[in-house]
Image (tube, rainbow, N blue to C red):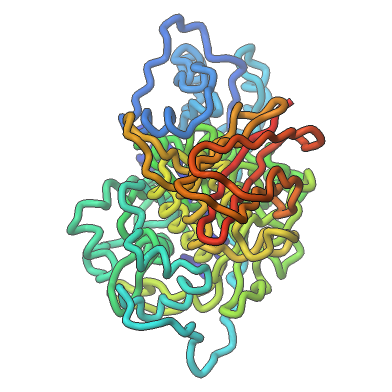
Length: 558
């Protein structure tokens, strides 16, 4: 990636085949705009959704119930009317009900006046942020002490994995198998030449790569570096936490300074990945200020609703996709704060720390314009070991490389509990991180603890599948769910447990209720619980005994 490129954010986008072509010449005074349509058009035919069966399954498992109109394609009648006026749609977004197109000077007002047009807005163009200067050299990278022998040889990547406590789940054999990870970034080059991707390619887990720029290869391999942190595998050199995941890649970045990166590539790529059944997307890109002469976003726009890229990322989360985004590398600049789509309330924004867990000086901070804490969590972003050349390794830095570590850990959570929705994944990462009890706007809820997060994800997994009798283990259920009033914890214990403690916590790690402390009998124990006084929202509970611990969640609604 070029020296000034902003941290890349990997997310899920989508586009039709026509969007992969290079844009033809346009008038010198033309500017690309989003044209938002007022409705879905006069067509009477119901929507046919052309999505992969895996996308249908993911929506059913983790997505919210959405208006069916949200999947209806842009109206053919409206597209025809635009073309009759000489407006050539470039990208069609079914999620935004909008198209992008180049409009000459004065033409935007005429298009805005059309009866089926709701709004016209310049397409956001990514201005690269200055790459943070390299950290001072040290005699040797810090490597944590760890009992040997290990199941795997992590090489120099052990530092970045150990910092987020990812070694224990990896040693137990977790690797993201069965989870589909999407990378939205620059090009990858020839992955077959690099040993970090040999296993991925041999096992057929690199499913597809699509180019949404329509432009020549610019030589940037930032996407390859990001992918290596999340899912590379070369024992003795580099291992990413999701080295067993399936991979989708969308090239939405074109890095030479004469051509800026645009929002519509991002939206198109995300919609495509959604239809392909992606589970988690890493985004190491950020949108804030645009070219001179165009409307730029301001810090006040980073409110989780305004930027088009944030709207797309939040829609992806509604459809069951976990979106992980770099917080940004602007912490030492006048901008300072996170950028889009990291400002999204459904997006997991990742900050950067050094090997001692101290915030990297360049890591962008919060809050969002509407007062929410950002970033959400953090991982190593300085001296990160990654694929740095066609065949070799090196060190780099930026939130571009802390985000894919977290995206890889998310794949582990979904491996052990495929039913987790994006909001619950975010809350698990927050509640198990190093600052869970005292989050702030520098590192959010703190350093990710992968082992604790995986344990909580496992605890939340449904214990009964396909009518099978659950094993004789400690089990906790809540009725009703969600809680609208007085409720009951049903605790099934295989043995007598003399010193049991059932506590309820909010997402800041504060204990808000103690439903039970005492002895549990073998079999079914019913513990009443009155949530009166608790604000609506998601809470976590922990049942601790001398030998067994169980975690879970409960939702309070009014």
